[in-house]
Image (cartoon, rainbow, N blue to C red; front, side):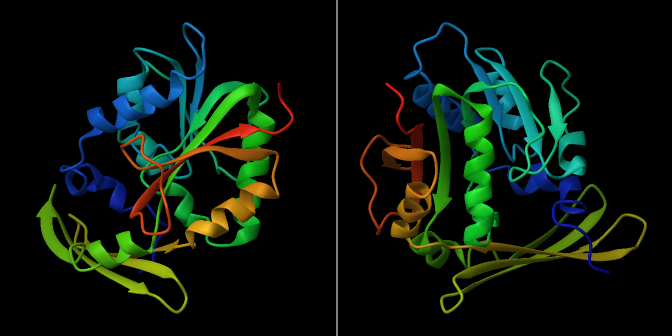
Length: 242
C-alpha cells in the first residue's frame, strides 16, 4: 500500500542515516551563519526532518525547525526548540529570520521549476533584508556515484525494509523506492522522487527571484563549486540591499 513520503520511513530514518555526522554538518552550517554579524541570530530550518541538526544548533542560535512530515518531527522528543509542520513552498510565518537553511538536498524534492520559485518567494518573505538563505543540492555526479550504494535492505525496530535506488538521466529524476513490512505485518511502500537539476539551472531560478548567489561552494568546504561538483552549497542574499 503506497503511503506519503517520510511517513513510514520516519520510524527507521535515524537508523538509515546512522552514518551521517550531524555534528560536522551542524558545524559547517554554523560557520556559514557567522557571516551574519549578530550575537545570537534567529534561524529557520526548512525540511529539518527529525531535527537532528537543529538540536545541535539550538545551543548557539534561536532556532525553529520545520518539516512537511509530522511523523518525522515526532521522532525527536526534544522540547528545547520549537518544531512546526509546514511546506517550504507555503511558509506560515509572519516573523522574519536572519538565517534560513536546509540540508541534505531537501530542495531536490522541489521537482518543478514552479515549486522551486515558490520556495524562493516564501524564503524571501520570511527572511530579514540582511539575512542569508543557505541550501545544498545534489547534482548528477552525486546520483551516479551513490545510485548503487543506496540499494540496501535490513531490519530495525521490528520493521523490515528494502530500498531500491535508480537515477534516470533522461528525466533527471532520482528515485528511491522503499518497501516496508511494519511490526504489525502491514506492507507499505514509499516512492521518493528528487529532481537532479543542472548546476546552471539553479542560477537561472535564483536570477528570477529576490535573491542573488552570494557564494556557491563544494559542500562541506569553502571552495567554489562547478558543474562537476557532486553536492553544492548555495548561499544567497537579497538583491538591492546595501
